Image (tube, rainbow, N blue to C red; front, side, top):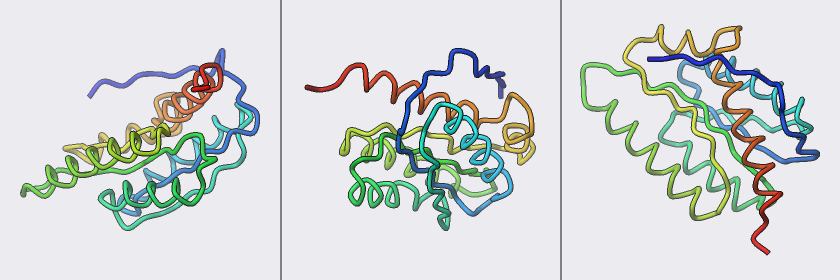
Length: 159
């Protein structure tokens, strides 16, 4: 898996933006590292401090996001963190596919960006390398994506 370094230069300012973070409890140390790094990026861009919701697993993430968006339509983006580790059965494929399709459905139903950092990996080392304390942490990418799409949407309103 290729890894990319991310820079916070030219970070748009999105004052008061409201974002939620959801994450799976499975492989929580990696998800927490990505979420904490993401919060730093969001705060640097002027977002409100996001609530972080810890869920049983990746399959529950789309349902939880749907509930959050129904309850709080002022959310400007939701960020999902999870690790799906391939084992010896087809369970990996089912969880991966259902999680991804669920995110797509919710995003379009609510017209709200969902930044997907649910990582399907074949080795736990791949997850660890994307949650490290460096410029390749996927939390940076997720925060940047959220800030950039919020900025774009604010500049391109529907009405």
